[in-house]
Image 1 (tube, one colour):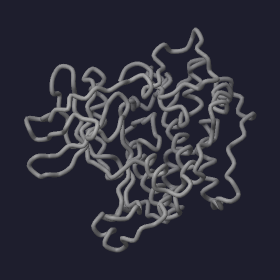
Image 2 (cartoon, rainbow, N blue to C red):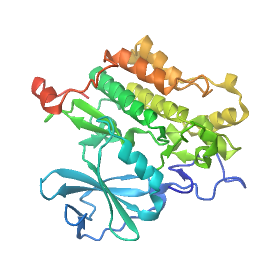
Image 3 (spheres, rainbow, N blue to C red):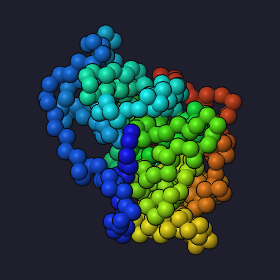
Image 4 (tube, rainbow, N blue to C red):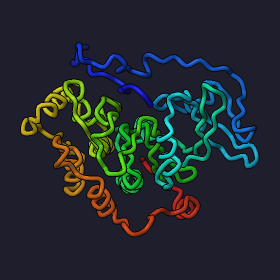
Length: 347
């Protein structure tokens, strides 16, 4: 995916001479036209209706439709993207990402010279919609939070092992599956690798120019990424740890940890290495967040990326907090899980 992607630019950061020209607000600038036709994919193996009714969401550089696998009747998600925006190394990474905690890639099809289709498993909803439409006060209850934490920890471990830096972890890119008729979360999966990058085999991220640009979504963007608006700052997996910290804080409090002006200050602090000026976000006392979870989130939201929790420590601590076994998959099949408890919760 070439160029710079940022879903929203802070209003307090006015355009300057060194501001990337293609730093855009995608949802405001992009108007999608639908053909309202049934589209056949991969020689008729899959079909979807190119309509607003079938549209289930937007990702980086693409739009996602609800489709069906003809032979099995299985529902699938079909992501339609511009072919030129899909790089071979990214497709290689996506094919290598085999984990039940990542949204599974079923097939890839180049329909014509302009369009590529990514056929993926279809989930019930995403975390953003769950927080807005299902949960109480925009936060998760304890049971749902622990499932989310465990599955994000396991999912990101799979990315880390494949040297993939996601760069856009946010509630919209965490898909959920429910226990049958309830809104109890039984699975959380990381999705949308449209602006992800694969580190070099030797782990030298500085050799990749794509790991020194502005990419991601503003409210979940690590300060060292935003600092590239001011000067060149190289980064690695630690930017995803910050994004996960923002997501967890939101799930616990119902609020994003930083507003636009706060983010502008953080970008300046990171660009200048002024880490002592940073005040981490505070948890409201009424939320009654445990000390160990507070400590985890604060470790993820350390302004200094060299002191921030690493993917390895996040994996270990996240599973420890949830009581999960780091040596096992820790994932109950949906049928087994749903049969044990189908009661609704407050989410």
